[in-house]
Length: 148
Image (cartoon, rainbow, N blue to C red; front, side, top):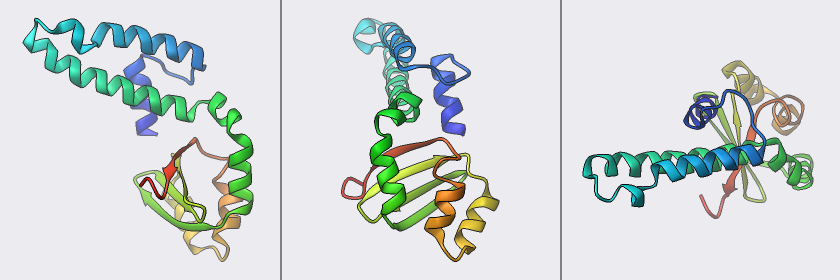
């Protein structure tokens, strides 16, 4: 959840925003902070390079968790979560990363430690995840195992 709030703070928003608005905010922020615009100001150039990287990272992250992105990829996600076994998982902070046997990697944000512990101790991890994690927390596709 921290990454979500930091990304939203970078964009000056407090709640999920549709992709069109997000793109508009992104373009205006990049215009303001693009390093090419500040070539003559050494002090602000370093800040602009850092800030533009933050903006790009936040934009890609917010797009990946947007409801429109989930809707566009819902068939694939439904197929994976229903039919592909979990190969591995990792819990860090309140982010649960699940690696499926087909190589797909998904991150789930805001998963409380007690839910993670229940998942680990359950007799059927995949069934527990389907019932209590896959559609209960904000998520994004983080890549494929071959890319990680």
